[in-house]
Image 1 (cartoon, rainbow, N blue to C red):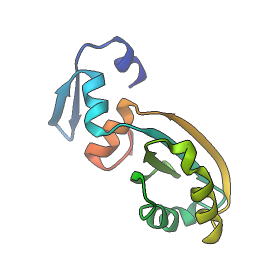
Image 2: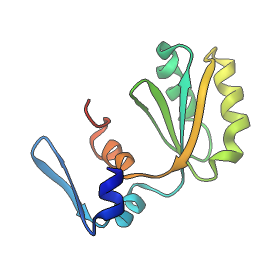
Image 3: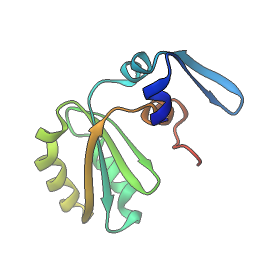
Image 4: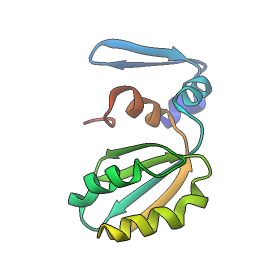
Length: 120
């Protein structure tokens, strides 16, 4: 997906033989939503569902998914939401092992359109 994003003028996303979208990488990423992507790895993967449910109620969070054992959060100005997110996760007993922050990607577009990560 990263190579397609860098080198392609247009990208098609196909799921189970069905064409879902065809557009420029930038338009596809904008269609999904602007904002940052925060990937949170918890000490206990079994807590991901509870974390997802709790985070869905936080103001300013646009989307929460679980992908490959991580809780993936999309939010505008995600850095400003770190304290609230960390406090909330701690309150439900979901210890944080790792957190990363990045920009929107074509893989995020795929996840939003199909409800699952690549190779699931």
